[in-house]
Image (cartoon, rainbow, N blue to C red; front, side, top):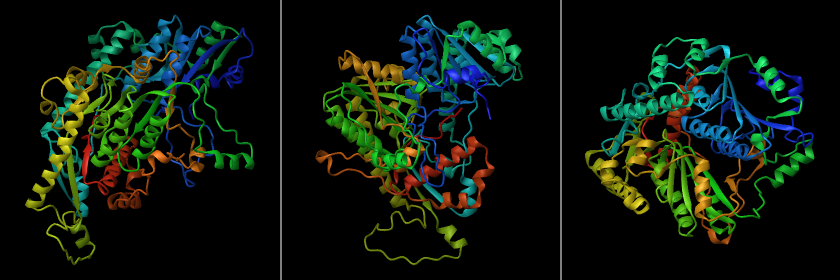
Length: 597
């Protein structure tokens, strides 16, 4: 198990256990441990089979960036320490965290960053540090950006599944993973353009932050096999030092009055106290109930993951609650989604439009990806913020059907069909679409595509540069390119969107509250997740039981997923989730396979 910088020193372990400081002479120094995956929503899977008794909820991206912002403005804080070993952060998160570190430095404070390895992610954050410390024997793997997508046609052929896909948009390549063995020319071109944009952006930021040339960074990358000493020689890191030596140096530098606070990122978070059975019972009956804010605030609603009729329920309910809350002066929707169900996207858009009609500011902050349905739900906002590396666009529609007739034949299953109505068997899963049926499906999808474009035109208006159709058709853009063509308004992160929303709402004392409130697995297990929407929303949407897919069940039964590396398991799981969504909505606003680093 990896040990943190500050768990190796008994003295510091004691003084860091609390965010309360001993006296007014104590020097508080926040420690930001970015180890592991930091999600947008903080959502965890809760269940008796994977139950985690830890009552502490996960740290979210909102927690990290807002606490960095607070540290920059706190006069009593002379420095912060950031630990990024094994950080599972997306590039958009890294860019906003980097700007937070820049703000801390701009406020005249020191930023110490430690890592056991150097890669693109640690190098990007390290470019904002005043002291970037690398383990002398640390692994250096800055060999470039690599993207890999999985294609399942061979697997589906083996089991006899035929995937019938209809696209609206020449560049709408979603679904190719199921019926091709490699990307189409259009899909490959899009991925190459995205890769070029992200690669240039990251290298430029690293070079600028470290005060070296871009060419020298490119040369360093292309050398392939390099050492920590090579990185120091180029200037990508400031020093090579072990964890224990760094702890001793920081302790000596800031003196015995220093209190290294690992809980700073959770400042203001009240964790439930679980000391016995009575506390468990109390949590069971109180979970899901939150106190109404007493002061004006900016509501931050997070939507993360694929869009379907289950996933939109928490975000939609929160938006409807905020409409009725007079203390909510503005809304920021944080979107990290590749899209999904067309109808579910429309249902969530409609709730967001209701908030927009309340004449309060409504802004969107795009995370790593806000494409297709993710862009659909963003389109009605007053302003859209995106990171340069955000993947967005993919304005197009795709529909598909999985024909399982050959699978049934192999299993010795035959079928006898009867129907009343010429097209009653349109979505019969024993055969692909007929020529006439494909045309019917296409016409239906053109209607959805028209609505998609209308939502964008109504929301974006004259901010769109040129004809929308030339920008749509399934084309995918980086945030930097989306700004140029008017699909987004400003480059920036979540904190930038919150600040702008507060400014537009003319709030004197800006305060932001995140919804749905992140919960630990323990809390989620007992929480109902529904506080009631009141009499104004008596016809509402409830999360149901997600249907299971035949392919998903087969893979899990055979245990094949366990044979794959973690990154490929994630891709397989993402596509299995898409299969589930297809069982309830045949028309999808889903982004194509996107580069993942």
